[in-house]
Structure formats: structure tokens, C-alpha cells
Length: 230
Image 1 (spheres, rainbow, N blue to C red):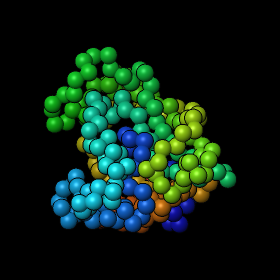
Image 2: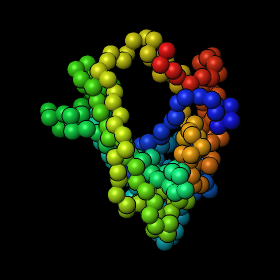
Image 3: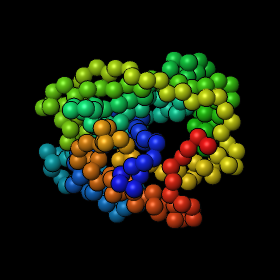
Image 4: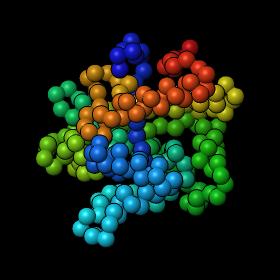
């Protein structure tokens, strides 16, 4: 991003499902327009529009159900995926974060019922030890079977580990840290040019995420700046 080209951080956006729920920018707009129109997080008419089942978005229905029905016990136990591709030299990759086996609790597998159980799970883990993830990349090896422009299609090439993400043991809920978190913002376009986002879903994200970030800064009455270690 032009006004952030001297920063020293890079954003990596991931979700806990390997596929994105819409194929292209047109569907991206229709998907969120239906969410706004219906006031629901389940925009049924986007997936099932009309009486002809041959026109329903069957692949997107399957992906959407997979995302909605997924239940996790802790954010530190889940795997995450970029879903969209990124530049890597002259080629393209997707990336993923895979939790270390040490992140996985050996206690009961049931999902807690408390409202803030995800935060509780992070607190319990990081109070005692660090959390680690393998940072994996997946190369595009077939442009036809692994398209840049459709993130609803699963790439079949193997993942390769290139780094380890470590989250140190800590107490993360001080007022200062909560405030710091509330003022953070992110965008996949906050990146090195060598690893810039690719594809039709990432192109509108450039404007969308920047506008959201500026709005959040204005509402919180804080300047827009990247985090540092100081």
C-alpha cells in the first residue's frame, strides 16, 4: 500500500476453513448485499435464488455449511487457511497455519457453553505455556486445476513448512492490551510487493479493508499506525 510502504509489518489473513464462500467479485458484492438486505448472517437467497435447483450455488452451499457448522474448542487448536492466493516469485501460493500437537488439549472434547469460552481457552493455555503453529505454503502447480480467480476450488498440491509461529506465554487481558487490540486493523494488501494478494476476491478487499480500517480509527479517535515492538 502506497502510504504504508515503509512499514515493517505484514498482514496474513486466514480463516478456519480451506475454501472461500464466494467465487468472484460479483458474487462477493451480492453475498454481502444479501446479508445487509436480510439482516441475517445466513443469506439463504444468495445460495438458493429461485425455484430452479440447477441455478442454485451448490458448491458455495457446501462451503457455507462447512464454515457455519464447524465448532472449535480453542482458537489455538484450529488450523487456518488463506483461502485466496498470493504472489511468490513468478508463481502463486496459498498458506496455512497448522497448530502444534502441544496446542491440543487432552481434556474433554465437548464445547463449553459459556459466552466467552474461546477467550477463556486462550487464557488458560497462555497462562501456562506458549502456543505454536507451523506456517505452511502450498504452490500452484496446475493453473487449470488450481485457479487464481476462484477460491472455492481446493488446490491439491502438498503443503510445505517454511516457518514456525510462536505465541509466548502471557497475560493478554490488561486494559492496555485490550485497547491496543481494539485499535488494530488489517488488510491482505499490507504486504511486500513480492507477496501481494492475487485474484478477484483480493482485488475488492483492497478498498473494503482500507475503508473499514479508517472508519474504525475515526470512531476510536486514534491515528492509523502499524504496531511495533516498542
